[in-house]
Amino acid sequence: MKTASVIMPCLNEEKTVGRCVAKAFAGLKKAGVKGGVIVVDNGSTDRSVKLATKAGARVILESKKGYGQALITGIKAAGGDWLVLGDSDGTYDFSDLEKFFRALEGGADLVLGSRLRGKIKKGAMPFLNRFLGTPTLNLFLRLFYGIKVSDSQTGMRALTKKAAKKLHLRCRGMEFASEMLVRAAQEGLKIKEVPIDYYPRKAPSKLSPFRDAWRHIRFMLLFAPTWLFLIPGGFLFALGALGILLLLRGPVFLFGRGFDFHTMIFASMLVLVGYQIMMLGVFAKVFSWVEGFNRQSLFLPIILRYFQLEKGIFLGAIISLVGLLVGGVTFVNWAKQGFGALWAIRPAIFSMTLVVLGLAIIFSSFFLSVLGIEREK
Image (spheres, rainbow, N blue to C red):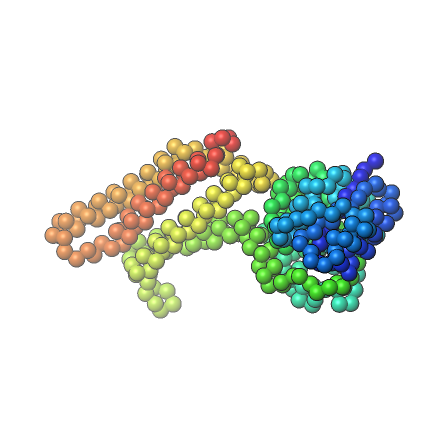
């Protein structure tokens, strides 16, 4: 028979924590699942610990602050086959755990309690959270990671102990909710939603809407190098390369305006900056692959299979050599003119761009090797 542990973070929730623990035990009994309740107290100064203990919960004191930290501590301490996570502020109904267990029995690895598919009681969720904040974070998760859920920020969810061990959760703050989904997607875990009811809090909320929203977005960007680095860097690189090629022969006139070597200098900068940004994305992807955080990526196996340090050095050397040859010819012609005014500005810009780009390719190839690509092949 499967066993379950219900884990609740707690910070000054004396008005509700005892009732939440009692409902959790009732929910376990109703579902016919053996288990217990773990309350992770994050520094309460009221009677929360006393009331949670009185209600029958195992209380763990966690001195490190943070919603995510409390849940991580609870997950590590839990011994059940199934883990249920939920806030101890009275907003969730722990007496209705059966639907979560049925979903886990049906093969789901992670089950989200969707407030938006259930009933949100009057005054339970602020207007901006319901119609702007959560939908926006849902959109980012779908766009960046292909995660299609209706309520990514729900505080009530269940997962198997086996799945929890795979996730390697680290975020200590409210972005823990997004991290769990991103890690689950990267591990190829099966995610399911069940509708739940959502009730008003009894005590003032500890959320900071804009700060916590930014923490979620920041986390999603940091773990989405394609959107943060590769796409912007690729766009800048392509735009700069196109500008250099168009201006290499002479001025270009568009919309009644002339674009000359000043624009070509700017295009050169775009090429070099764009390449550096793209490589930051590649480094991030390779690091996540080597560390085991993104084994579902289709992009990484291509790099791991075909990249060799020697190939990178050779490519960079060829590009730099071409740049040096162009620069050498330009220098010789300048010398023949007695080192007067340098009119061959376009070839000089082109030469400089190729030399610097080639050197960047060489050194970035070394850094890719440092990240451990050779070990992973």
